Structures are given as structure tokens and as C-alpha cells.
Image 1: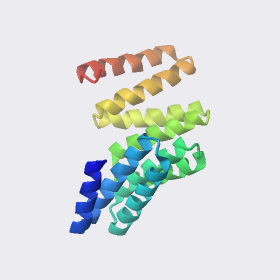
Image 2: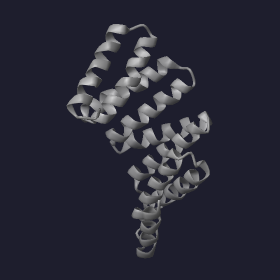
Image 3: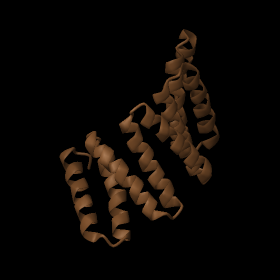
Length: 177
């Protein structure tokens, strides 16, 4: 965080609004991972305002997705869904498929939290399709694990084994395990 603070101060000094927003978005995500929700929300809302001012839609969509994660962690599911869906709409508009794969995974996680496993599986399968198409191997492995778990829940064991075996093979090939 010390380096992020120094980088942010330098970006502010230089008047580099894009770098400021990118740093604030990353800092907000870090705070979220540390469960420091107040600072996460503050940083992300600052980033969101800058992205909106400079009309950088990819950063704006990323920031909205990160805000969705914050609200999901707070169990404010309506707010989380609002931000995830808004982010997804922007990513569709700007054809950011890699980001959309992450949105769909997050919407799957949210649906799972809410007990709607059928909807969660649909989102995971959308995410997995994009991740495979774009060769996002880490995302393929992560979403395959979630997909396999839900396929087992729905008693689709053969399909689950295929998905999970493929994830294991990719993880070994890419040395992610």
C-alpha cells in the first residue's frame, strides 16, 4: 500500500487522471480483499468518479464490478447485483469479453449465495465459454471448479467429471498447481 500511496501522489502531481483512477481501483480491490470495506468503497467510488469524468469505460466497468464484490461481501445482494449487471452491460457494449467472463463468474457466485444454483450454473457456463475462447487459463480452472461442483449438485456426475478433469489437466499444463 505504501507504493500505491506514493504512486497515487505522483499521478495527482502530474495531473494524470487515468493513472489516479487505475491506482484507486486497485487500492479499492486490495482493501476489499483485506475486508476493509469502508476504505474499499471510498477508493472505488473515487475511481468510479474519475473513470466517468474521463469517459474510460473499461476502467469504469472494472470499478463497478469491484464495487459489486464489496457489496456482495457485505451481503447487500441487491446492490451487488446492480453493480455486476451494470458492469456487464458496459463490457458487452465495449466488447470486453475478458472482463465479461469475470462479471459472469461474479454473478454466478452471487446467484449461488442466494441459493439459485440453476442460475449460478448458467452464469458459470457463460463465463467458462468466454474464458475458453479467450484462453484465460486461470479463469478456466477457477470457473470449471465451480461449474463441476454445481454439476455434481444437479447429479450430472459424468459431465462434472469431464469439466473437472479438464480443469486439472489445464492447471497441470500451465503449472498453476
